[in-house]
Image (cartoon, protein in one colour):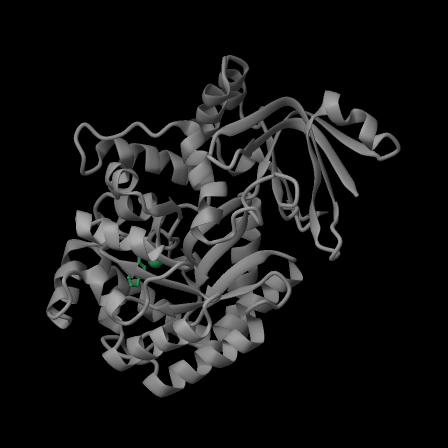
Length: 429
Ligand code: GUN
Ligand code: ZN
């Protein structure tokens, strides 16, 4: 058992933030031996129950759920900050050449380690990540995540056309590899598998059909892809699949929209697309730093809320510019203000935070498992030092409400503020 005492943030089922100025969380094994939250709440209410336990008292700190990154590419860790006119030249000039290096298992293992340590340094304990088209890139990633006891989801990229030598795969083999990787990794330790068509333009109809068949055969496996990110990409997808009503509708036609399907970006949608997301239970991984960096467009938060489909926040590194959840939340706030709807929406700090924790867990079908600190949730959390930087400390000291405190962190916080990360009931950093 581990007991941590400090200010504490968690969320009610409806997304309302619950805050204890002096709180306590106790981690320990459940009946199956999983490390979970055994007790949580106000210190004054729980102090008697932990008599005899060594309580770590952390004044000036905020305990919060480990962050969830809904869309990221581990092989693009070293691609961050590669400038390009837009998405398609960025893929061609930087990303595909770099990803071709992951046929080397030693290189894949090296980068998987750097990537996972960087996530932890930034307080991210769960991510839905692309690997590359090389099956060995998945083995390297999953092995490294398992050693760190992290709840990670990943998959081998499918891309059997419009892709250069070195990353292009072969239709039948790619589907056999996917099924073998599902067998090897899905449900092993805390790991999950995601069927990963890169995006419709990089996949033949046969590959998309095969991916959809696997998605039907393995309903609790995730699906991840990209959609409606950039206007040139949307035009290209429409040319390649003229029979579909929209780019998103291509995926529906192949059985790739369902619960546990997470689509990155979803910028250039109309209301029919939004309704299709809602009705199929698919979710959007909103990637604001990537959208701003690559000039892709804006996610319409108002449209998503009005029509009512699931969405959460993502870094999309290496199109995105930061592993840091504070930076992603701030970019989401900017994007909301400037988005497609005028005058835009002003997302509250607690809503931004929810979209990167409990809301992201809901989008993954992992509500009550990760992304929150309610009883029974898995024992992943961050300990945030509210005085980690001079300006942050000053602003936090003047915060008059939880919303002001969270906004101070979103605007002024960075990786210095993530003092400690707990993964699976153990101190990981
Ligand atoms: N669309 C297809 N591949 C990619 C990728 O690697 N990054 C982004 N942002 N969009 C994509
Ligand atoms: Zn991406």
